[in-house]
Image (cartoon, rainbow, N blue to C red; front, side, top):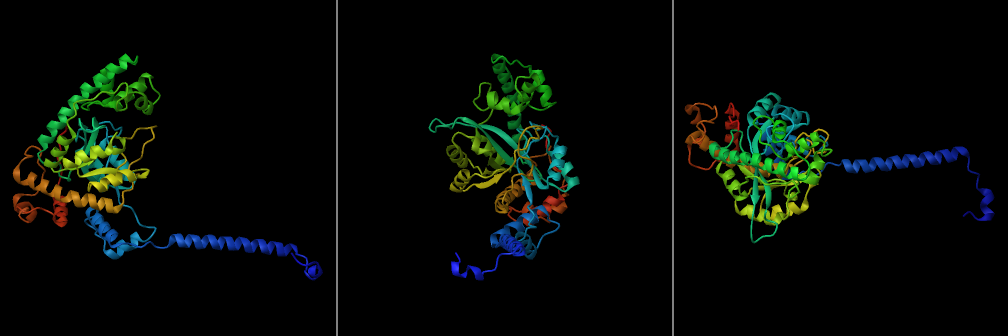
Amino acid sequence: MIPSEDAADVPPLQEDDVQNTGDAAQKEKKTHKKNKKKKRRRRKVVTPEEISATRFVRNWVFPDSPADDAEIVELLGSKRAARILFELHSHSSCSDGFLSPTALVERAHSRGVKVLALTDHDTMAGITEAIEAARKLGIKIIPGVEISASVFSKEEAGMNEPVHILAYYGSWGPTKYNELEEMLTRIREGRHFRAKKILSKLTQLKMPLKFEQVSRIAGIGVAPGRVHVARAMVEAGYVENLRQAFSKYLYDGGPAYASGNEPHAEEVIRLIYRTGGVAVLAHPWALKNPPAVVKSLKASGLHAIEVYRSDGKLSGLSDIADSYGLVKVGGSDFHGRSGCEEPDLGSVHLPVISIFEFLKLAQPIWCEALKDILTSGTNEEKRLQFCNSKELEHFSCIISDRPCHDCCEIQILGKKLSCVTIGSS
């Protein structure tokens, strides 16, 4: 406060002075905000690991236009750092998805996805169509399948439940294809039996449906699943939407749930290993006892588990993956259900380090599978259209007995492959 005796010496505050004071405060506020933004815009420190991982991934996705380290550092350190979107979990109308393989690829392209894994339930029937569509749009396809299985243990609580194992193959598909297809066929046949059991339970719940109706919804040659039953329930007016059908009746262990003819998960993982694939546990957050299941499956040869979702990384599952030395991946599990809330293609942003670890794990496995396909004749009927035997002599990883770990050779081989022929199961 100004002492009373000095008050007369202080000139009264004019209107202009008030305005100037306000302007100065506003200016100071704006400057403060700008400084904060500048701090946020500071280029992040790029680690050697990030550079190495990004180079590896970019060169795998874009082998014709490899980036040098300076370009990679520039991209990683700026706001322009473009993600190389990998979508590792998607479904088409060949199983319980709503989009055809072609439409799925087109949607992935519109979403900026560069690498798409088609992982239909218990079938690889859509892979060939997806590859043809992807060629026109410049997308890489990873042939995959989500195999229905079960885990069971008398010793471990929460070890009697259904699980899904994702299998990822090189662009030439699985080796020993007939062996894989035999298992998938048995599972699909079990799906018909399972659907009938579900319909029987729904009849007991006063919601009768005909199997023909469910088969019509599934489509010609598609084994009916719970989604197809749920769609029939919506059509009949028993439920308002698919979410309600699952949350009230069709969830695992629900009043209308029924199991099918699923093999043991350990058997599935061993088969994936024999056929040149990478085995990944799908959506482990839905399990009753994830640690016990992961421990059991790791002993059978599990390679990785899904940890990343559209809402981020699940730290608990990440810790489990670290405990067992498993690679961490993820995907949207996209089905294309209109009017149903679900993550879209490419919505799961995998860190480049995770993609690098996945590819580093997968490439030697896929390369050895290619050697088997081309040299043993195990896929005689499903064999790929490749170069002639003279051309094969240029690729030492194919004609030698040594393990194939050279990603340069595998990229050249991948470019020379003209098509992939997967059985229309």
